[in-house]
Length: 392
Image 1 (cartoon, helix red, strand yellow):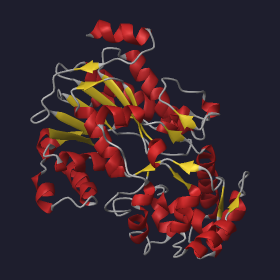
Image 2 (cartoon, rainbow, N blue to C red; image 1 turned 90 degrees about the vertical axis):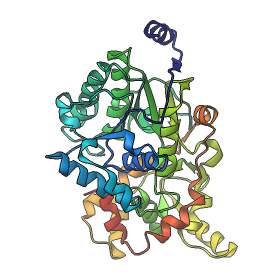
Image 3 (cartoon, rainbow, N blue to C red; image 1 turned 180 degrees about the vertical axis):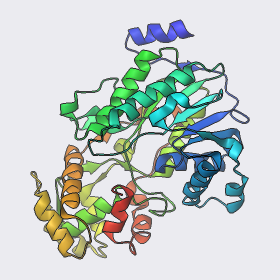
């Protein structure tokens, strides 16, 4: 099996994964379950009756603290109290990606790695954590006797700045200069180095596009990124055209896709986009009137006529304009946020998800299908407060 994987990679092809799985009773380890995507994956495993088979690698001074953090995060996904109470300290593995070499992983059959330092700043620990830490985790996992699949969560934006707005999966990461932020570069390089350093590792990389909200719970679990969409609607201007599309999917759809790939007995590829894809990436002109809460075709037309496309964003002026509406935040912080998200918005990527759909039969919802739920669960929360999901 190992030599087969190596020969396939040498030819630039995807390595098939052909293990005999028995999902029920299988040992699963999830890192990063106190985060947004990791928490959704844990909730998904609970829905499938697999929570009892799962251990969680969690930061904390003790297993008790780690368990408390895990329960608090899963509570945001409205799991029954009986399910939360059923989690035990025996399911907690003390873990910090910054010191991954010290972890005692046990010998899981499936490992889903969601852990990362998720920051758009040039954090001094970014490379050591997101690349060095992942390599140490891969080193530990590669020693396991039973490991059948190592699922690593990357980001679709690791593709960098491309001329083609329709992005297909590819094992290449452009130079740092081609990335909007160092974070996406670090995530892409972690994948490549993990693949190169441990060719025997049963590695499957999944790259989510833009994860926003929950299809049923709206922004109750997290308002990450949604605050920026609200801000754009308030400012009535941004770096994307009305005809541009945005590839957004809900966190529960993201989790469902990842768990399906993690537990499917055989996979045709080792790299997948988790995205809305061509079928469900919406145009800005479709979403914008809904954000403005327009109630008629006439109001839709008026809102669209009032939107201004800024190819070169004036972030400081927009930050001041936003704060004049009553926002309570630092103007430099808001300006920087606008600047960074404008970079991503101007790319207007749609990430091809043909592999995912063909492999699992799963097609994520469009943002339009759950947008009202996100708006309803956000209306009492000021944008600057919701912003703290990403800027604490």
